[in-house]
Length: 256
Image (cartoon, rainbow, N blue to C red; front, side, top):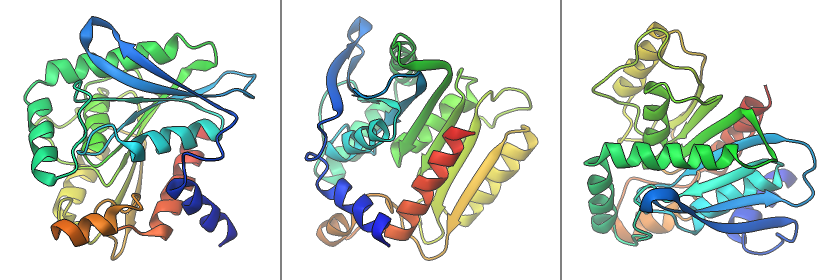
């Protein structure tokens, strides 16, 4: 329980206690957008590099705090703006509009992701064989689709992200191992979708690790989800146990 309390405290007060973390705003080439790179200045040996893709709200404080937390764990993290506009939504209508615009231009999203991957590879602190991508909500779907496309990644991890696709992966197409954490009370990721995803990954021969939390809603890793649920009457909610358990699973996943 002590570790859980400290973990939640960091997420809520993420802008303090970060003296060892170097935060650098970066610009992707070809006007593709921006991101924020996080390095631990005590890190001496090459470690994993991690692309962090935000929820449908955009590259906000929550996404950056997750990247900062990865840096505190000893990784190099790049939180990338997958919308490419720098805009951040505070209302679901705007978030939906931003997301739909991005999804309508998959070539640009792929280019942003690849630019972020290459930027990580240029960092001397990054082991080129250990580049991962993680995503939340919208971002979870993004990283899974990058894996389906055969992106050169060691692994991808999706947290409360959509698992459906119109173009299922085929055997041998996915290079990355896959970690998925989902809530069984999440109407946006119903049980049928989870089952279809497991069938897809099994048929494709993917190294899949699945965490399915009973009674847990969408956005379970985000401490601000309860306030969003109350304000907009959305079926979302924070769950501390699922948050910490899935984070521990991510640490094991990237350490293997």
